[in-house]
Amino acid sequence: MVCYVPTHSSHACEDVDYNSRIFAFAQANNRATQLICITRRPLAWTYADLIAQHDASQLRMIVLDSLPLRERETDLQPTPMAAEQLHYLSVHSDVPAAIGSAPRLSVLRLTGPHVTICPDWLSSAAASLTLLTLSGSSIVALPYSLGQLSALQELDLTSCTSLTALPETLGDLSALRQLDLTLCSGLTVFPSSLGQLSALQRLLLPKCNVDLLPDSVGDLSALVELDMTGMSRLIGLPPSLGQLSALQRLHLYGCITLTALPDSLARLSALQALDLSLCTGLSALPHSTGQLSALRELRLKQCSSITAVPDSLGQLAALQLLDLSHCTKLTALPESLRGLQALRQLELTGCSSLTTLPDSLGKLTALTRLDLSGCSSLRSLPESLGQLSGLRELNLSGCSTLAALPDSFGQLTGLTRIDLSGCSGLNMLPESLCQLPALLELNLSQCRSLTELPEGLGRLSALQELDLSECRSLRALPASLGRLTAVPASAAAQLPAPACPPEQPRAPLSAAAAGSVTVHEPGFSTLKPGTAASAASVAPVRLQKPSRAP
Image 1 (cartoon, helix red, strand yellow):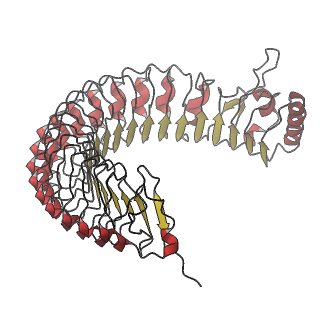
Image 2 (tube, helix red, strand yellow; image 1 turned 60 degrees about the vertical axis):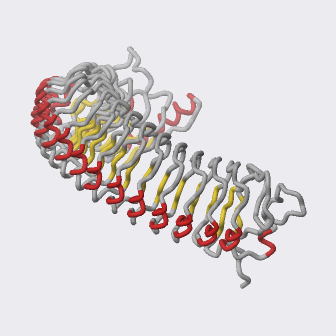
Image 3 (cartoon, rainbow, N blue to C red; image 1 turned 120 degrees about the horizontal axis):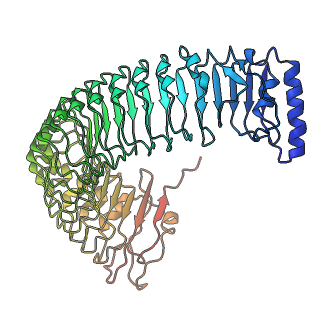
């Protein structure tokens, strides 16, 4: 039997009657009751009432996702019973006194601020308990007997802000695979026995107020993931970190007081992802970084003190993602960049001191995305850019000092999106731009120095969106733009009226054969006869290809 109590009543008198009927039904069937589940708060029950109405020896699961009324001092406490068959217990307060032991318990979830202690009988489940969750509880200390939980695989202490220390017996949890201490802000030190957790695979420490890890952390031979995100007091990493031969993911995001990495980091031969984003105190990477042969992702976003990356970076042959976004003091990239043959994504957003890119950029033949948006000091692009045969997305928005694009642009035949918005120093586009057969989107908004567009723009047969808003110096659109559309007169009528004298005609625009074209049009102070134009800041115009009659 399953006793399921989804209490929805908002009136205490109704709850009293409803609960009494549930208890009566449970009592009549107590020999078969295996599950008690209460999902919302009844107004007139206590744990003593609930457990007393069931044969605890038959219970397999108790889920009480609500809180009982405070036990009345006059209530007689029932004699604790052994829940011999109980496998799963989830409550939002301390374990009911009616449960004296649960020797077969495999999952215990005690969550929320009303949880203040672990049950005394916890060690009786030592051979069966695999998951213990105390997240968000008010527990200030864990029992010394914790180390007796020989079967425990996962210990979740997330948001236990009152917890100030961990017992040395923690190291006795020989089967533990995951330890989650996220937001345990009261923890300032870890026990040295931490290194004895020989089966530990994931150690999650985000926002713990610890300044150093114990040297014994290097003994965690099975560790695959170490997350220290937001540990704002962390001042260094132990040299023993290099002994973590199985480590694949190391997260140090937001460790703002970390100033250096140990050279032993190079010995992490299995490391695939290294996140150092927002490590604002980090001024350089060790030269040994290039020895991380398995590294696929390197994130250095907002490392505002880094001025250069080491030449050894080019040795990272497996690297697929390099994120240097908002490294505002970075002035150049090394020529050794050519060695990153597996690199697919290069993020340089907001590198406002970057003035040039190395010629070796063209050797990154696997690159599919290049983001240079906000590189406000970038003056030019290397001619080798055209060698990036796999490039699909190029973002140059906000490169305000960029004066021209290389002629090799036309060789980027796989390019589908180009964003040149806010390139206020760009006064012309190369004719080779019209040789991009896969181009779907071209954003030229706020290119305020752009005076003309290449005549062959109409050859961009795949183009679906062209944004020319706020191109205040643009005087005319090329006549070839009409080739992008094969339009009947009915579709042309969807365009807004031009902001020009009626005697000056405009060339019609319509849906492209491939689908639709969205045009954000500029304003024109002088109009050339035979060219398309409309009011400034006009809303985008989407012209759908007319459907064929059945």
